[in-house]
Image (cartoon, rainbow, N blue to C red):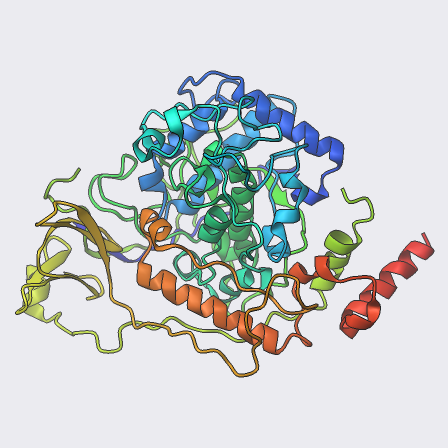
Length: 578
């Protein structure tokens, strides 16, 4: 088995897309367009489940839910996360176009209203229904997707029934239990990893904001449909959220031309159905789970041979300067081989024109163990003013880095390396714990006594508790990042209580993080990092402005920072001379 040290797919940029669809943010739609979009989504729910994922004229709402449920393990917590969901959102676009909606996926820039996201008309009875209700099972009871009007997926894996969360498994109950009144990840926190990441691996893995998880769990509720990592597409909020997730990746790709073709990392295991069966290296030429007629390479350029869309500018788009070390894309004259198992869809080719330039350095490494592999017409506050404001705002420069273990054991001598034929070595410790040492970079994951190692993954080890027979995941130990409150930071800030203070988002629950195969120590560190970033933001709030706070400013201009007052005066002048 082999583990990748560095793998970068540098692919030539295609130019087949000449008229890209501009995906709009929800608040940028007119009332009529919002209704049209909801009606198109409802039209997809009227189609029967067919299992035909490839034909946009046949795929139903429930096909999307069920394939996400079946492939959730392969599509989360590894390199395939972003391209898998980009492919899903592209097929969503194509399906919507067959039922009267031709404007592409709609995204919701909720970080731009992190302090009052629950006030969005998304949650009105005209559209998607309330954030939460008084229904005993947390069923949505108003809007187009209310109980009795809408059916959730039949859920072939019986996940809903196993959790026994809805009495009788009511198929018309879409469960939503969001944390209304609680802040979510702010635009300033979300922008930080985009500014600092210089590789796809860093972008995906160093997201200290936890924004994807926060969106699911806080807005949808961890105990309800949108908060579930498998069947979250039952709630149509999924597509508004993952429109934002894809835009976040897209914005990072726009920062430097080479980022558009950067893809490296690992699959969940070597036995991923779309893997090559040899290792768990995430090659850009591999086909995608669920969307197997497309390769990862097909998903890298949103204006290439397969994809053809871009994004509107929205209120949370804080400036992202070009990195100082940005390198140009160098195309190779040698085309890559045709992707295996390619199944051409109508209007697209199974072959990618992408070409590979970088050499791949391979080293031994882990895959699965052999053991038991199982309308606001004015648009002043939240629209026009915010977008102008972005160019006046500097993203705070403070950065908290998550350290590695300070005193990592150094055991990779020549004898050990020679014995490392499986990509990792199990080392028995004097206290009867077992440490898995990964040969590629010598990092270790240790399992305490009383557990039997079952599966070894790239990022974690699954072991069985010998006494209870229950599985548990173990991760590489990390030095903890403790929360230290600066003296200048205000205490217990509630959303909207001050014209420039931010309230902190909910911490990601350990239950949700575990279900998403997230390193619990890393999640805790990330939450502490965000909390300290917001403290520093609040300390400097007279110099920093967050788009999220615009919705709370009153017409009393004497309470506003001078930059905001200037922008409002500019807005009034422009309207006066229209």
